[in-house]
Length: 115
Image (cartoon, rainbow, N blue to C red):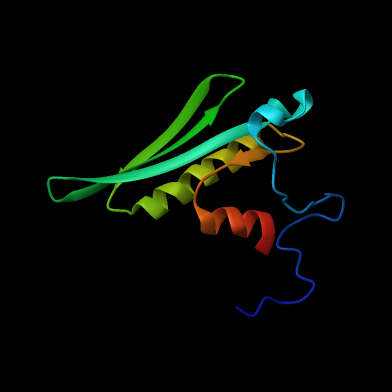
């Protein structure tokens, strides 16, 4: 892709944006970051002749999960949907940081290194 140089993609000048970085193991996080930790996963299975997917986000400190599900998409779609749910949670709750634990290699590398 040919991204336009200098484009802010909707970020206001007063917003401080930081790059993603690789997080330590969850049990090694400082206490002040553990409350901003979310785990994501997605799956897909075939039921009859239809693909059914489910995306999940889990908070280890709050012991709560949020899910989304649907039909006709792939496991990769579900994985990305789970990450979208996690980002939505962090945004809605105005978290200062998000420690996101996910397993899709491509997504993790995009968030951590490529962006």
